[in-house]
Image (cartoon, rainbow, N blue to C red; front, side, top):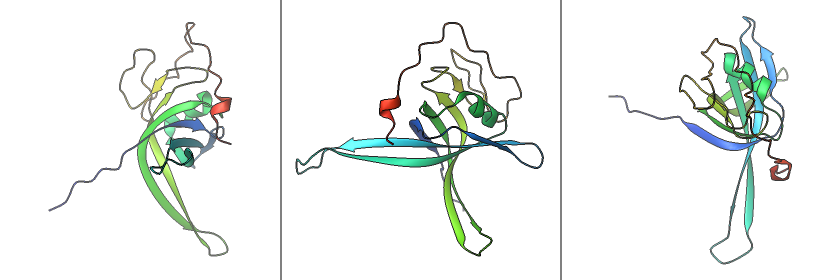
Length: 158
């Protein structure tokens, strides 16, 4: 009897770098970028407020990768949803390297050029067309009523 499992990741954070777009041998787009998330807390003993920043490696494929490359920029606040994956490989010198990545299938830009735009695997959004790695349509044009861009430079933890 097999047991069910779940591999689901949802993050809201700020991009630490612009997406890097590459193409596989069969012309499939791959975007990689980083997201920083932070949390703060006050210790139970009443000490000073503490803060921690975590950095996440994000990977998008196909049409979603192209959209990320077009719309996302360092400092943008973004929501991503996907699965966690760890892969390893050997370098030319024989060293074993490991990396843990979030492979996304949904993305929503929360600040930047298209505030509130949602790109996912088919779910409709009130203010945008659905986009995903499986969608072959063109990226929607920026609406005339797009909101002003919020300055998030002070929120970036680096």
